[in-house]
Image (cartoon, rainbow, N blue to C red; front, side, top):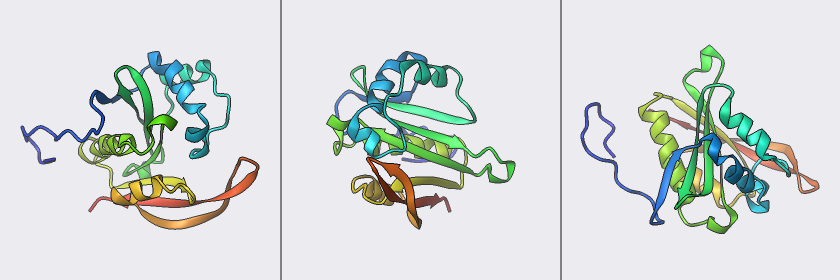
Length: 180
């Protein structure tokens, strides 16, 4: 993909599933995103708690807090993944954003996470001119850690007993990607 100004070159299609579209989330997606967030595999890899309601998701989509974007992976009208890019609120960290994402349990390992990552990195690099992207990932998330590393993220530290999940405390890595 050419990121130089004024380029007329079209970005290459990186989707592995025919019909997959990465697009902005909208309030009409509230029910589908709620179902996604309540899946056990999706939730296991995130800080989300069980029993999200359509009302709370719709409220967020209608009035998002802060600066950033929420994107969804849409396969023929079905939301099968999402990713958020949240810009830092502190003026001294305006060069920074945080990423959080997840993929539908049935579609894990099929390139959805990679497609979401490509889209959010394009936003960060070519539209927001962000220098630093940060994320936190459980140390046992064997699918996500390599995906992040493949996209230039490095482990900056280990957070002991970071979160309570499924009856136990679990560790997480803090990872970041710096744009040169």
